Every structure is written in structure tokens, then in C-alpha cells.
Image (tube, rainbow, N blue to C red; front, side, top):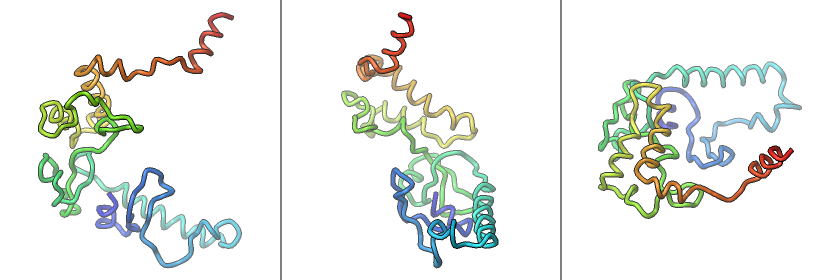
Length: 183
């Protein structure tokens, strides 16, 4: 997304993205970090100018319209070549392709997702069926429903494995519910 944003607007470039936004590494822009001097040093006219500039960048990014919903890939990327990704007209070096989101990861929270199956084996029919649910999507509703559809696919295909993954240990909320019932 970042290289795409840079190609269609004057936003700073994101060098790397980590799980926590506080660890993102952005392109260095000459000047001072506003956070360090915002409260005590910056006069109101400078603060207003900073806010106007940030609003302008956001306006540029939010004005972008895409032919489909999905993840943004470089046009030469393997995923965009091997899927029904579409070229983005406003930035020809990019394509909209399959989404990258939780239901499609092999490992969440350090636990392998359905380890006794071939769900995540490229080339297997189950992998292809799950991958087909990743888009790109032509409508917002399809995009919003992709996670539910992917999880329902897994639950329907692997009911026993799904039940085995359910945490059956009583939680604090279960204990609270028992107390309420006995009152």
C-alpha cells in the first residue's frame, strides 16, 4: 500500500511494517518531530499548518477509488501474475489482488491452523478452495464477508478438528455466569 500511496500522492514512504504501528519505519522527512515539541514549543499557526497538511494527505488517500477490493501488489509480483488481480489505472505499476487477512494465515497466535490437514499445502484442492475466497472482490459486501466465508469453509470442511481446537476450559465469564444463576 505504501509504495502505491507514494506513487499517487506526496505521502512519506513506509520502509517496513511490523505488527505494532509503533514499530513502523517511515521515510525520514527533513525537520523536527512535531510530537517532541507540539505541546510546549510550537505556536498555534504552525500547529494549524501541520494539521492542514496531514488532512490534505488523508484527503488524497481517501479520494482513491479502486476497481476491486483486495491487497495492493506490485504488478510484477508473483501473486498478481497468478491470480485475477487487476491493474490499478491511477498507478500502472500496481495491481489489486488476493487479500491478506487472518482467516488465510497458516499459524495464528503461535498455533498451526488445522495441522493434520492439507489445507495449507499449495496445489491441494482444499488450498485452492480457500485461496479462491481471498478475492479480489468486486463489491464491498464480498470484502466484508470474506473472513466469515473462509472460517465457515474451514468449520464445514473440518468439523472434528474445529471442535478439537475449541478451548473447553472454564473462563472467568463462565464462573461469573454460574454465580449469577445461583443468586
